[in-house]
Length: 349
Ligand code: PAP
Image (cartoon, rainbow, N blue to C red):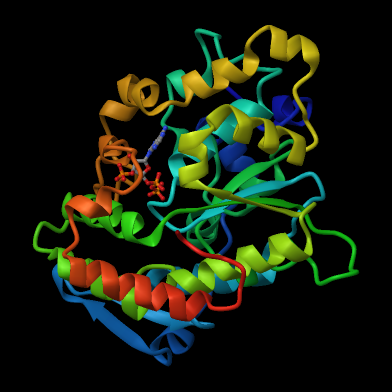
């Protein structure tokens, strides 16, 4: 288990759950006292999602989020200080986050934890426990823990890029870190979201999930603005933002793991290729492998909201929308996509 003294001597990324559990670390990093945000939150546009126990979303700087996360977004923008060696895994929910988190951790930490090792953290922890979730930490005033992590830090967020200041500085400016973004065909994201949400909110109608995506009023939405923020940054600064697609990962997982490794400055050596390290990472992080781990069969993603961890590992295919959407729903979503993505160079064929 990690200790704060032991951590400083280590190379990152280290499994974040171990850091959280280390007693002396907890006392070494006091929580930030909560700030007064009532005025900020109550002044923002609001909408509720009926099928989700009237979940309240607020529109903050153009993006909808659960109102409890607005203070986290504000604190993150004010206080997050990226290190040049940081790697941030970013996504909208249900676009391949868990898979990419696992692949990124296995790739960056492969020297300390070869993928075949019996004690690999991904064999005892849910992938989300291996990375700090930025807005979760900032929501609880616990972001001081990030400072104690050894470099390179590997972190996870659903925040739009515009809300992670300094991650990708404007053209010509120095600094920043590296961001790996994953997106997914939006109709499949909606299907995945609906199945997931229904585990806690069984009354959510599929049509409501489609409406949320089309109207933009889904957590961290609008989809288009979220994706385009990262898409445009990847075009302007390809050395800073790697833009991946879930469908491409399905088609060629090994090729995309190699891309990821090159992007973070840790390309696989000829010896690693020969030893089957890439194949080992792909196998360790495959849906069947992760689904079979005890840590992913029990427990909750977030103990407060009670989404079972096993709900993160459902079907894992492309085009599942074909067995869920009416032709009219699909046409509507495709129409919104065509409209929002016109002349951006981004498309979901
Ligand atoms: P999150 O953003 O809440 O972490 P996320 O991991 O993005 O969720 O979404 C889960 C989806 O990724 C599920 O898709 P589905 O509902 O269409 O099946 C899940 O099956 C898929 N998924 C999770 N892990 C893997 C994996 N290792 N390989 C392929 N797909 C995966």
